[in-house]
Length: 68
Image 1 (cartoon, rainbow, N blue to C red):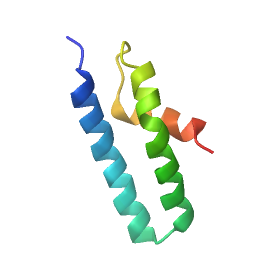
Image 2 (spheres, rainbow, N blue to C red):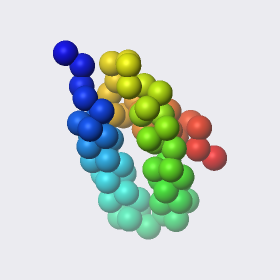
Image 3 (cartoon, helix red, strand yellow):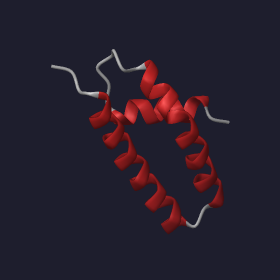
Image 4 (cartoon, rainbow, N blue to C red):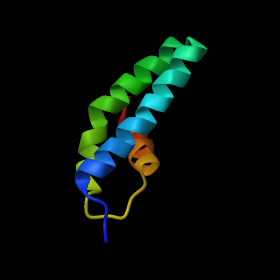
């Protein structure tokens, strides 16, 4: 049985929160800004992958690739 959209959304959010914590610890403005841009695209990617078996990190990876 596939994962529902809300649980994938929660998983993606948890992974992004981890990345945000790491960026804060590194005090790297570039990483923080990139994660902000990724957050803007992640739901778009998530929606496109809703019929695919996907891992939250795959969604985030694709969002990083399309975020400039």
